[in-house]
Length: 282
Image 1 (tube, rainbow, N blue to C red):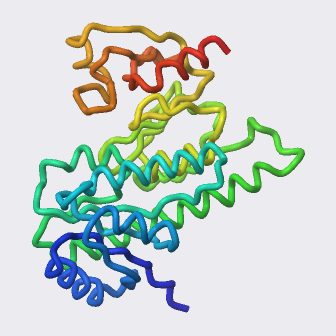
Image 2 (tube, helix red, strand yellow):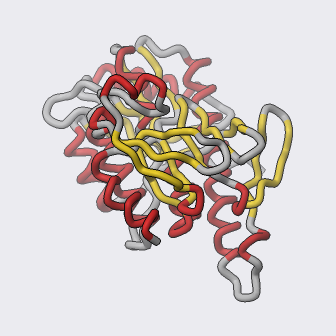
């Protein structure tokens, strides 16, 4: 039985670019993809998404009005609403398709699965679709595991994250996880004894892990029990801090959190400083 085709929303202000993507998607067979709608602006895409659902958005960056990065940020906030139990559905996967390579780092900080530069080759698009299909399967597994863990009588310390780390399949108890950090296309899961590279989305894990973990920065999710110290550093000190830099999220304001057992420092966005203080007080 063939896998169900990925439902795709095309968002690009150039009709010819959307036409070319349609043609490329029709040529992709495994996994297959079906264009369910098109939008010429971010606002049109948001209007469509209020009433409809899709698996994937192929998203341009530079468009009239709000750009693709702003749309992705809005969808990530919607994912945070789902994590907080507000009833919001998890957002679709995002693959950026643009002529401007300089936005790649920001795109991956927004949980984008891939970043394609125009002109897009069919083989490269096919590889992105495969990553999307894998991410959606992992998301479904996380949701299924979360539902099972919510059953009465379950031991919280027995909860695990299953990690496929470069060919090794590992079960890591949640009680051992210090933080999850987004790094370009992948996540790093850190315990006291090891760092594991894995696929996945911080937003998905934020939705699953709930109150036990805290999003200290858009690229880092930290176990509250691992928070040891909050400190303000001089701006020049941030060269050695993960996630630091002038990225518009307040990390350049100088706040950082120290992680237990490994004595590593992670940058904290200004908007999350109060939440980290609360975690320390708790």
